[in-house]
Image (cartoon, rainbow, N blue to C red; front, top):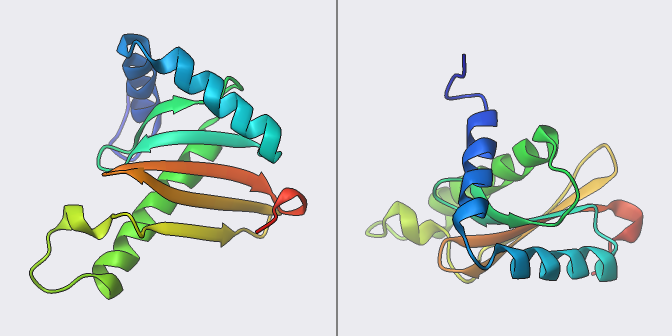
Length: 133
């Protein structure tokens, strides 16, 4: 049984999206290059609204990293809604071309989020010793 709080259903749907997207092979190759050249641990390309990943690098996906990334997206949107939006803007405008985040965790990882296109985000997991600004 799966509840709405269990991210395994979103991860499974993400895999379905990858199977039906013809360009996913090219995206995976580009993300693999990004991981190798920038010494990252894991990279996802997320649809911000559904929190499903469109593509990821070829390393296996674990639910812990996926959950960290979806929580980061929620945090960026929540902070933008509270502090960054005018009164007449809607929820979709909370995530825009200026949306980004660098979050350091106690376990030595850094989560990096950057908007790529409208409601599409690149989320990277990087070891702190490999992170350079």
